Image (cartoon, rainbow, N blue to C red; front, top):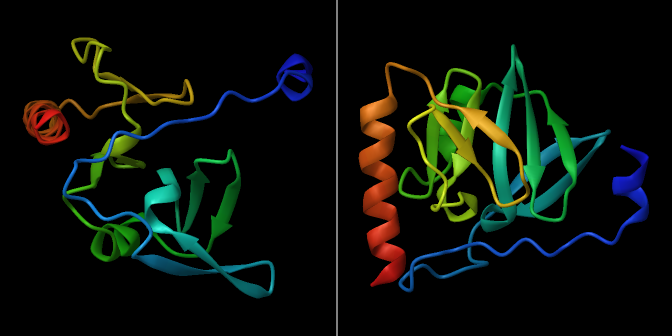
Length: 137
């Protein structure tokens, strides 16, 4: 783990559809007695932990916010963010599409692996295929 801190971080490159306009939407996060603004397209994934949510960004920052994952599910764009598990939402722009979903695992561009819920597997697979088609065209 210490080796990761010493090596330079490789840049994380998202794959947005051509029609998506980046940098237009920001959300305010209450964090450490202040409010910070985060661009929605910089958010890689969200991990729910009870009444709290960890937000992981493209620049490898992690924010703990006292909102539930369900609140973020209502707030964020459902064409870009998908709830793949009761505890996880991912930004489709940061999903590695070369990885197989047969093992019910999605790999993100930063190397993180997230398990897909069995119940949502078919829906997630079709959403991933549709998103991949939009990014290619």
